[in-house]
Image (cartoon, rainbow, N blue to C red; front, side, top):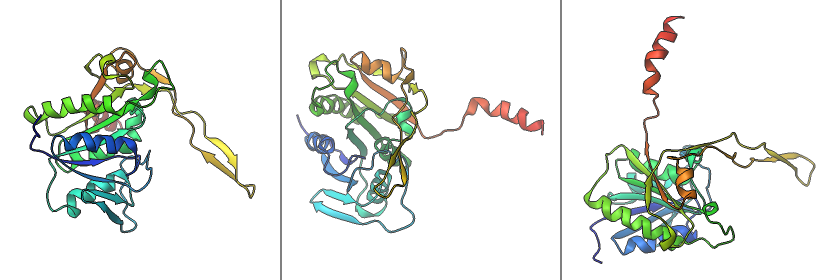
Amino acid sequence: MNKISMRFLVSNDDGINARGINTLATMLRELGDVVIFAPNRDRSGASNSLTLDRPIRVDQIGDDAYSVHGTPTDCVHLAVTGVLDYEPDMVISGINDAANLGDDVLYSGTVAAAIEGRYLGLPAIAVSIVMDSCKDSHRKRDYKAVAHYLRRLIEHLENNPLPKDTILNVNVPNLPVDEIKGFKVTRLGNRHKAENALPITDPRGSTMYWIGPAGPEADAGDGTDFHAVKNGYVSVTPLQIDMTRHDFMGDLNRWLDQL
């Protein structure tokens, strides 16, 4: 298949050496030109944080790969606003090595990198693999299956662009290509509150804490991203940057009038 005329900026939150991002870059090179800007280490959970208290080191480690001593958002921001001498056509973040479903998008560095791309005016996709969608929990991650379905989306996007305020959050079940049932448009589900923080004691006797695991699924019924991947579909959720609760503005005005 001939290359499509696109230049891809690739990032993630698992770090420059993650298997997922390298699988993604390999697939995208079959479609167009690729440049990787990824954190120098795992920055999972970094959300949309920008590094503003110090300069950020960017190490070029190949002709088309940069290791950034910062967050996923830093990576995309620096690439687009100064390091590259051209503007990419699309930002793709992933392949994250675990799900980004429901509330996960609030914390995910993978999703944040895509959001930053959209903030800067570029089409953007975040893509993740969902491990617990597989009956065999010990099955190895099949990043090639993820790349297969992502490729179909990208090829369709080239000639059928989405609205400029839309980010796609894509979650692919960890199944063989021929066992995935196709795409399903979904909304974000949500989880119960997170489990309690886990205290541990350091060698000097001081208490430290691990952040507790994410809560179990709460809203995970038909139509949600949780439900789609559990039933063997690729979940495609449209996200938007505007977080304003427009339907509550009238009620809020009336509430303020009571002051």
